[in-house]
Length: 387
Length: 241
Image (cartoon, rainbow over all chains, first blue to last red; front, side, top):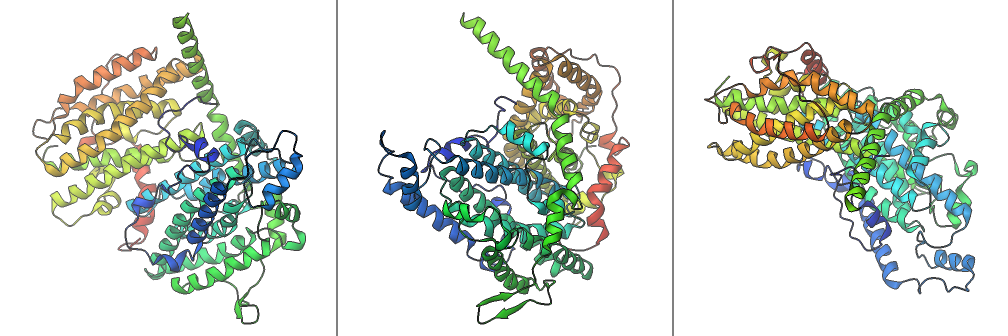
């Protein structure tokens, strides 16, 4: 582990904002200042998701202002106190008592989210060197950097539950913990960078916006910050596709091909259908999860249909049509057998993604060892001076 | 070289090629924090490159913008120094390259901030703050690796020895340029001598001094770097992105 790497704006203040409910969390998204005014209106691309994040943030502040009636009295039943906090929509904080299964569920979920950010750098990173303009190169590089920042931020949130980042990284490297299966698909053209932004980041936000109201305080606060940045990423992806869809015939074909390949894997990001989901019920009761997989998937489809029209691109589903009775779109379900195959390791890029991460980790070992040795020498010298 | 266009292009090309190499580290750095830091530095270099190439295009007056200069010139038309186009090697080589580059760019941009050309002065004023951070970051790693473990010391010394020949090209005299690079050598030597000593590393003797980048005569590596960088842009002539 590298001790104190200097000049890391992302790492600095990370722990502080996770641990203190009222530290301001401005959306210091990397890519913010790279936007011109040359993208479509916000409501065409990100719906009201950013509004929902802001509402969750306001609710979080209001809950903090109401207070929780102090901490549990020394003789109080911790289990009853935990239940009261959940019932009152207050936040569980790191020092509070919590059921062991609640802690384990959160560690698994937050770690898998962190792993997904780190592995997710690869498919998009694949196009940094070939980005077709210097402006696009800068936006993409900043976006992938944001993902590294999210990974760090989420590992820090997991560490508040009493596990170390090194342990979690080991779980990823050894394949004992998973990351989002979507990153096991390849980015074959530049348009895939747009499709990932629009569909994959879009699906991620739909999944994550409710987590801004999660009962575990550090995770809720991390998700508010992550969602704000993700909504900019989604808008960038939309804008890439919009430019391609209104460009040359070859660019348009590239955009449609990317949407065709990424649509169903994006729908599968919401997980198996509700009947088959193993972790849902308990997580709902604990207010870690707030909506079912199928509810979120429907929300995503309804959002995308309008946006696809604005893009003038087709969603590859002949069964897609408005259902006035349900006030929602009917759609074809993704292939869940394929999802299970990819989760179990047989997607197009599982081996490549893991090999890449393992190699980076292994090739960096001598650097981490050197940093630790240098820090130890410095500490030793300081002690000598002090003595 | 000489003339404000050639001068501005050469600085822009240094920054662009450095950014392209640093960005190759994305998702491959030894630590996640370092992934973020290398991307930061790559973004700074890319930002400076865009400002410099845009301005170069205006100075030239032939209607070329930053993308025309970055994507539609061949390697023989690039004016970057050889140092930045060398492959990344291991982390020690990357840090040696970055350290030498930043130790040159910091006094360069500082001098540029006081030059008569207002646009170049503004770019210099912005970029020198970034260079100060790059130098700080690279020097910290040179010290850590030089004075870390036996293996890291060996790798860092090898990296310094391997890249040292390429620094001399940076300071070739050009009295007509807005900033004469020869005037920057003193600052560079002071920085390098201090940091290498702190890092328990030996400063190499000067022998072989390869050059040619400023005249468009590069190493074999640049053509490959450009082939990758330019492939998509060139496959769709005239397209907007």
